Image (cartoon, rainbow over all chains, first blue to last red; front, side, top):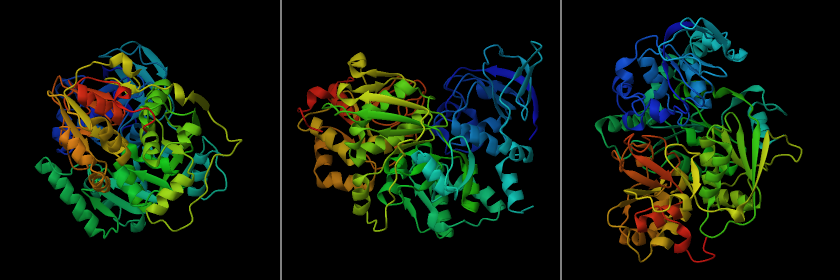
Length: 165
Length: 422
């Protein structure tokens, strides 16, 4: 996983829950089918418009609700580079770290505009807005998760811990 | 220490832990269901050796794809069943109802246990004094292989409900009011601990409503101190071993304490599309509905069905709606059948479906179409939760759901209940 991410912003509001990201009715379908319906409740064009590397920027409580990792699966299928929000729901945050989807929280995301060209240093929690020529400080990744993130997620971390190559 | 600190200290093999610390904890139960279980974890699990840490501590419940509505669901169900057989799991359940209810009924939930499950409502087990929380499928791979994961010891918000609930007002109303005040993310990373005389007065069925919905305020788990009711319940399920005495110390530290008087509470409704968009029933009374849903791991237990039967006995549901009743387990289905409850509900015009996660999560058996409105006893009203993103979900107690079924419009249940009936 790349720890420096640069991409174009798609902007969303508060409470983007897991039923929005990964609607329950499609969860038993193959990931490529699920991905067609990602975010459709609030943005029916999402699956068509997002490009690899794009960054989602949202308000508070991103990923609330279910423990479903299909939420990360569909975002990764679309090769979303990172999610920036003012806060994340607990399970969503853990799952993202575990599967290697960069997530950064920062106090206020209101100044970031849709279409902005943004660069993120995931480990340092630093966000550079190239369009606006500004820089923001988000929360730095907790120390105990550094190694896991540097290795690329929980699976490679476990492989190392268990001595499996 | 708080209850959370005590349980996590034990799980971490320590005498003491403090809120905020990161600890490695050992799971007493690792639970998976069909939709977020074996078919998602099998690849990673095998790549990492494929050895379960302790199969006696692994419980798999097929409940989301039962009965399968599509070939994909049937494939997932078959994969789950085959996986459980291949791993020679002693505890695999299917077609018995939602996992959270099934693991309670089969005695897997005990006070003081650490329970990790691949479903956000795993926190329901906290109603019996277990520290139970939802995890993702990848995290479950680590738990299955090593029996461990990391946790930040949560702070605790204490929610005290004293006094006596008025007639027609239930645990669901307590939890909706609590979530309204705390907010849908107000308890993120924290434990919600429910206490007070009103909580102690609740039956086991009702206590599980509170712990089930703790996650709707963002909480890591929802806890209630286990008392003689819990011990009696576990004995009735065949538990013969010592049951842990567990409580928060008097000098335990809380991040926040909320006090309520239960006797002042009215029936509450969570309105679309957020769980903390809660109003007293009087504010939404008269809203037309297309479907009512009485069921789910939140509110499909025997006492819920009894209340609905009390309200619907000898009456008919409104002509233009359908009323789906989904007992929370096969055991509850049988008990309700013995008591004649299912007949009463069927005679009133309800349809009794088999225990499953069904329409609550928009999976099977009763999803809604665009423009349709549901009054449901379940736990989430997010946009698209029960089907179309253009549908609307209102949440309330089983009594409110039953009263709404009669009128075809959101209704106050109190006028249908005799004074004093609980």
